[in-house]
Structures are given as structure tokens and as C-alpha cells.
Length: 401
Image 1: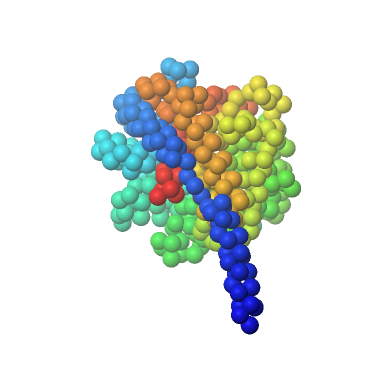
Image 2: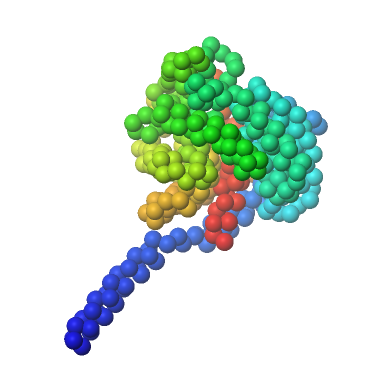
């Protein structure tokens, strides 16, 4: 009996000894040097955004800086209008610099009128990146009211026959839905949580399900635009607007989808969204046309790779999404996603992509592509590239803590 007990104890000890090293091997070990890189990059961002704020005329918001000499701005109606104040709120959270806070509060006032804008699908970008971050840092009923009105305006663009929120009102499209629209669903989930009105939740889920069905190919890449018949809900065409070709994988679109389905899992915990997010992540990471530094070319299938432009915005969005996705997945994918995001952050923080102090019009990152087929914003800084890079670094630091 004693021999049997001894043998059993030895077996248990051997089993434990096999399990414990595996757990240690799979656990996340942050790169200590990366925190220094991130803090340095955030310090640069604080400096740059003070330059940008100083150069920015009153009553407008920044878009880009063309040819190292011309600052392009927009009114609050432009889809990127919320990224500038949103970036500054993140930078204030890091630095506690009250000058930045004053600038963010001053510029976000320009955006409040957009809460009633029913002519755009981009209210998530515009209002949640700005007022959403403001409310996160400084919760108030006033912010809640602005955001709830924004969610109500966005929901008016939902067509129940199609099961999607309409994207554009321009062009020859019947009812266009772009993959970017996945990013605007976070506002609707927030609205359900705060108001208790489940209609926002149902719209977001229905839109995501329809997009999953009609935007995604067998290899888990996404079309940019799906056009629908508003009367029947049938798909008219699967096209591109900003990618190389209809059948190509526009890089930023793949990142939008990765981020969008990651947030879908965050709010619903439905496994199908996590599965798709993982599949999109592997499409990006395992893609033979993804460069070693993990900053994508503007389209994964453009014929002039490697003699073409990188898109820092696609890289920054993917990095932020991968950091969140790593917390929902198994240990093997967790390590892959974190290591990939680390590479992206290191690359973007390098002199290749990060501007020198005072240069680049005050923007942090260089080398993004807005719309290559439209000959617009090619190899320039963009507000959303900065926003998601700052967000990715903020997320990484919180993950380490």
C-alpha cells in the first residue's frame, strides 16, 4: 500500500513539474525596454501636439500636413474631426499637462453640434473618440447627453431590411456599407449600457452579423464596400473605394475589421466574433506581403510591392486591436499578438515613422495613406494614425500594470 502511495505521489509531482513550466513559458513577459520607448514616444507626442495646437487656427480641426509646408484643416463635419481632441485627452491622461486639457476642451466644443448630424455614419469616430474619452476621464451628465443624442442620430441610418447602417449618401451607390463602419458600433453599445435601451445593441449586432456575412472572403480578408439594394436587402456588388482593386485587401480596411470584431466580442462575448477577430489577425500577421517591421503597405495586394507606400495608420490601428484581442484568446495567440504589437510600436516610435520635434506640422507619425486611388493624402501624417498609435501605447502600458 505504501509503495502504491509513493508511486502516486511521484506521478503527481511529475505531472505538476510538467504543468508549471508550460504556464511560465506561455505567460506574458513585457519587454522592459518597450516601456521606455513608449514613454519617450508619448513625450514626443505631447511636444508635437503643443506645436500642432499653436499652428491650428481657431474654429477648425486638423486633417493632415501636406508637403512639409501646408496644414490642412476641416470643420467639425469631416469624419476625422474627433481624433484630434481624442488624442489630446489620451496625452493629458499620460502627462497631466493642463495646457493640453484646455486645448482638448476648447476644440471639442466645435464638435457638439454634430450630435444631431444624421447625414453621416462616422459619429462613432467623431463623437466617441472625442466626447467618449472626455467622459471616460471626467464623467458628466452633459457628456452622456451629447453621446446619447449622437447614438440616436447614428441609429437613424440603420435599414432593417438590409440589416446595416448606411455609410455614404454620395456617389452612384444604392446603399453602401464600408468595413470602416464597424468602428462606429462602440458608440451604440455604450448607449445601451448607459440608457438601458436595447435597440442600440440590436442595431450594432445586426450590422456586425450582416457585415460578417457579406464583407468577408474565405481567406478572412475583407471587401471595402458592399452595396445593397435598399428594397430587397440583396447584395448588388462587393467593391473597393480606397483599395487597389475590388478583390484586393486594402490594409486599413483589414485593421478596421480586426478592431471592430474585437470590440464586438468585448461587448457581446459571442464566440463567433472572437473567432473572426482571430482569423483576421492571422490574415494580417501571416500575410506574405506584411513587411518585417509589421507596418503594412497601403494594400496587401497592390502589384508594386515593395516599391510602394506604407500605411502607418493601418499599423497603429492593428497594434491597438491586437493588444485588446490578446486578452481574450489562448496563450499561443496571446504571445503572437503581443509580440506583433510590440514590433509595430517599436517601428512607429522609430525615426523612420516618428517626426522630429517641431517638424511634420506638429503631427507625431509620418507615412500614412488616406486614399491612394483618389490621389488624396498619400504618404502624409493623419490624425487617426496618431490617435490609434497613442491609444495602442496607452493600452500596452495598462496591460503591463
